[in-house]
Length: 222
Image 1 (cartoon, helix red, strand yellow):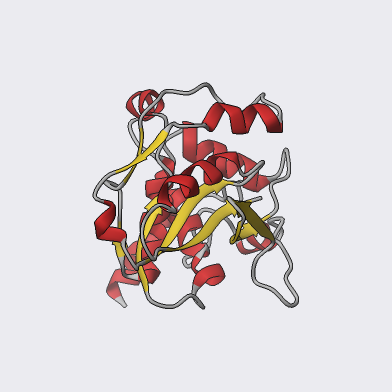
Image 2 (tube, one colour):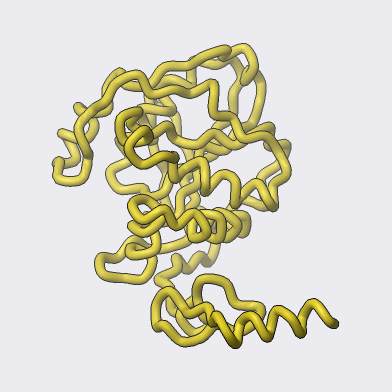
């Protein structure tokens, strides 16, 4: 009781505001107020819990995402602030949100964040996909695997490229270390945004060489 009282006093003096509308957050609200959270552009599923099936080398993989990636939407701004403004708190929150999309999956060995361009990671100081994995793992309680799937080239940004150019740009930039550690394991491959599927396809092409591996894919928005 005393702790809650002190927190209320602190919030009164140093109020936290909603990322979207700037209204003061209530005690149990994080990053967004309830109204703005409910207004995020969520995918609505009826029969299936995934929106996309990605085909790589003739095999289909399910892609789970929670939000629609809409330009000038709060979800776009949240992802941009996660990636470029050091808002790791946003990444942890969004990662926890993804648990609702994958909590039906069984026997998960670990979460594999999509590796970031090494130069970008050095300049940024972190990989936003690792932050998302940390948020998701607060619920999943498994391993975060950052030493197996690696990025070996500093390819150009995908942002302004066509779909064909994205796939061409991603060819051969991933490699795999200690693949025997992933044999017959079920992993979750996590990314921030799914657009053309080129980056995820590049990861899967490498991971699929692991004997008996099962790959599920999750991202914040698509």
